[in-house]
Image (cartoon, rainbow, N blue to C red; front, side, top):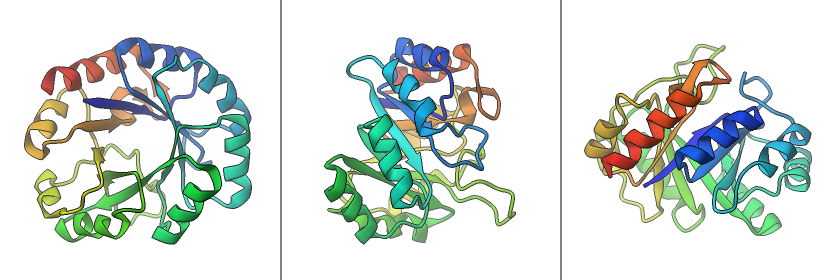
Length: 213
C-alpha cells in the first residue's frame, strides 16, 4: 500500500510523514491554496525527505516557468497535474523532465472515472479525487469531499491509480475495501486546519491505510 500525505509545509510535517511510514510526500505549488509553498521553500522541505520517500509536486495548469522553478529547486520524483492538462501536456512534461507524471481526475460519477482512460499509456499514474462544487472559492482539490467510490468500477484503464477525496483515518480502510485501491492520499484528513498538519493525524492515517491492505 502506497500512502501519500499532501500539502506539507514544514520540515516537522515532512519528518512526521516519513517516520509514520508514508511512501510519498506532496508539496503544493498552487498559490491560492493554504497549503501552497514556493519552489524555494520547497527545496528545504524536499531535503528532509529520506531516501525511498518520493517527493510529489502538485501543480494546477502551471506555466513553463513554474515547472522550471520547481524542477530546479526540488527535482521531484513525480509531477502531479491537478488542472485541465491534456494528454499532450502530460507527454510534454514527461519528455522535458524525464520524470513521472500523475494526472488527477476529478470524479462526481462514472463518466468522470472513465475519462481517465484518455491518459492510458500517457500518465504514469492516475489520482482520483472528488470533483469540487461549482462555488468559485473552492479549490481543485483538498476540499475534504468524498465522492461515490463505486464510480471507479467504470474505470477500465491499465494505468495504476491512487485514491483521494476526503480520506481520513476513520474512513480510509472502508475506502480501500470498496475500491480495491493500492494507493491512497490525504491532505485535509491529516490536518487541524487547512495547511496545518497534525503529526498524530498523519500517523493515524498512515497506520490505518497500511493495516487495511
